[in-house]
Length: 276
Ligand SMILES: Nc1ncnc2c1ncn2[C@@H]1O[C@H](COP(=O)(O)OP(=O)(O)OP(=O)(O)O)[C@@H](O)[C@H]1O
Ligand SMILES: [Mg+2]
Image (cartoon, rainbow, N blue to C red; front, side, top):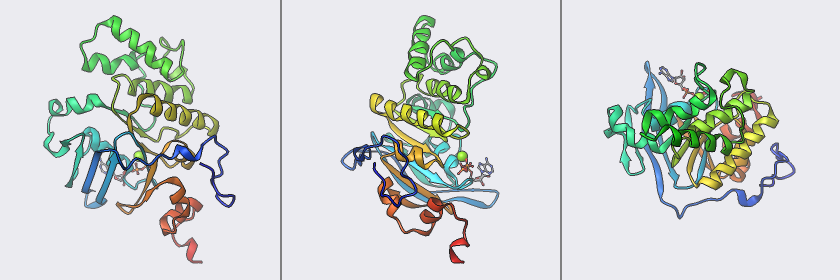
């Protein structure tokens, strides 16, 4: 996507206009309807309506604490809505109560957790193997083959026997991504995949995610504050504010939006500053 000269996000990345592929003719794979969630009487989600199309990459933006992780963690049963419904791949998630109920959907869903959340006590290879050991009855030879394959897919070689602490932040994120891909998910959720990385390493991770989206033809949700990443990988983006989605559209539309929270987000202002 090429930004207008006045845009603060002329990122210099090799993002073509065609990168923003809106896919309205595809089926809806994930649908939030009126989803509400409060913690200790404080409302975090106040009625989220959102459709995610099969094959698209949707970015969820919003300030810290706006409920992005709460919203996505509902897709793997780590949090439940107080009201409303989520339908994912034809399954009403409110009907899933036990781990056994969740198993089938969790096999289809890769979740790259905020931070990398690698297990320090295991080697990188064991981390990538872990979901396969937990969820499949594949032979050790098959698991070992897949560990190599997944690490190669994220551009890591010769790190299998290292501990995660021996890797750089960018390599740890790649290793976590390899673990996310372990079971060939149909849906991938990335929670802040570039947080804590320098901009160049962040761009590398962004390009890797974009390549994976193309190669694997998955449906993805990416939670991020990172507008460069969003511009690079997202077909559409939504902005969370005060428990609701206040914008939904393409990156180009986001840059043109005159919604006050979009303007604050783009220009990094705090509420009130724009009134002075
Ligand atoms: N299990 C919980 N118990 C109580 N409060 C919670 C719980 N999980 C989330 N919250 C609260 O919900 C709000 C939204 O949290 P969430 O982690 O979704 O924010 P976020 O948008 O992901 O923020 P960040 O960008 O910092 O990761 C926060 O105020 C948080 O404290
Ligand atoms: Mg979060």
